[in-house]
Image (tube, rainbow, N blue to C red; front, side, top):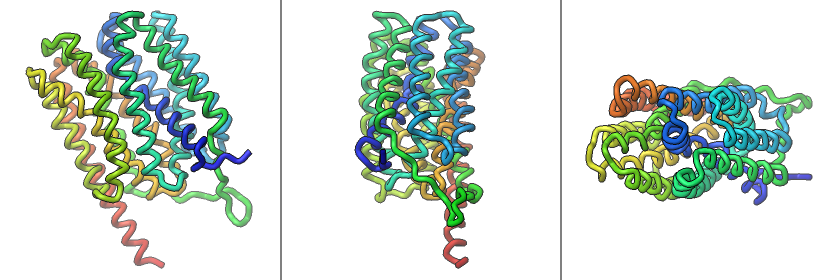
Length: 389
């Protein structure tokens, strides 16, 4: 049965796949700070290591699947991937043994990486990747609003395992929708009937991919410990929970704004400005002892990556028609996200939570440089394409 990429069922399945695959990044402050550290009693380094295992497994899985998107049946593998992830999260809700938790984090990450890579590849093959990924990010924002607003309270009542049950339900629902709605990928074949041999990725695409990893590194390093930083500043738990709720509210808008500004602002300007703003907000968040600036910086910080990443996704889709680069979005996003919790934990344990802000600044400078090089490389490529017939 034909399932077009831009049909209603296909779009719903792709948006849900993006939301389920990326919810782990949204969940980091609850996952690491509230559940693993606050309820399970792990130190920051061991808690961060578990999140890193999950995200690192997503990266390894995506590295395997993203070059093979033409040869893997998404209609089969995406439901299987998210279904296995659901089982892993349900298993995590029933254990506190560190070794078992580590194994289930790895299994869940491998499964999510499969589903997310194939989902992003199909989004890149849609008629307007920028708009569809913006819709997907908006869906993620709505899910984040409910997750950050409700799960911390649920955890306080039912215990840390409740968060893993919620994540398992999200994965299970996505698997069911994918089984009935995931689109069929049109096969790319040459006139001879053989699969098309794709050209190597351009220099600009590679710089954009590295920059995306650095952008998510800053994001996950900061977001994983935003709750702990607030507690360290002396704010009450009620105030910090209010900030997590505010993050969910603010995150409802950047995806919609990115869709609105698709043709109204310069993608290179957005890509370079994103990490700069991350660095500024990280310093405010970690250095101030006043609740107002902390709350505003924490609420806006996650919105930066949603708005910026939408433009990065569109940039990659335009500069790589094979969709291999966008299929590798989990590699880019989760490499940084995998390193972030562990690196942030090491910095916090040895230098204090306030030092995370300065670490983000260093990463943000490198990230801005990569995006500047990416957009320069793409511009040079366009000039050559106009000159060479």
